[in-house]
Image 1: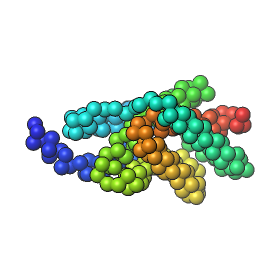
Image 2 (image 1 turned 180 degrees about the vertical axis):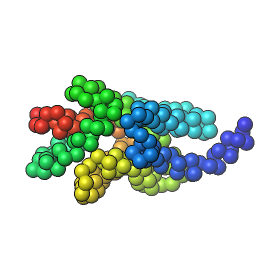
Image 3 (image 1 turned 90 degrees about the vertical axis):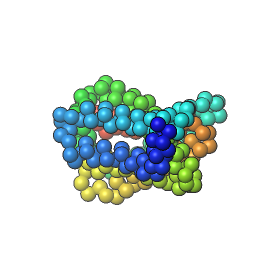
Image 4 (image 1 turned 45 degrees about the vertical axis):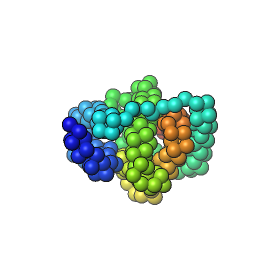
Length: 243
């Protein structure tokens, strides 16, 4: 058993490389290989389970470490809240500046409605139920995977700066695939801009994790950022005005 564990430790870098590309690969399967109309929910559940399971098994059974992802100091909670509000303000400000090109954003809503319909989301009520899961569950999973696991493990092997850059690049990939398949045609500039913002968000959340050695602050910030984006999605899909 110990020999097997040592061999697994020798495969640490290849394993981390696999973890960097796995979420993106699951999105490639979803968009380009599988029939989304029949297996989307099963595929989504399996991919999220794998993303949770792989770091847990590696840290607990290979590295023999405890899983401790949260601490709850007042300072990090306050930092998460304040930074999250700041990010939300930036998101709404950028949206307001982009209002003159609202027709472009609306051009992509039919594709997004199709994706949502495959998950049974066709009304504001079901949209906000899904939004609550994204803001809470998906944000938690992403911070657990990309900051607590990927960034932390990479920082033990390489420099903190390299770990932030690599883990944030991995974090961007599945967002890029989603955007490529849901933005209107001819939106390469917007794709680049949105991807750049996701990358900067990943870097900032790496910084918060590094600062507090916990995902509490980045998780809170991520929740608020996602809530802002979910509200804008509601505006585009159902409402048409931001307030």
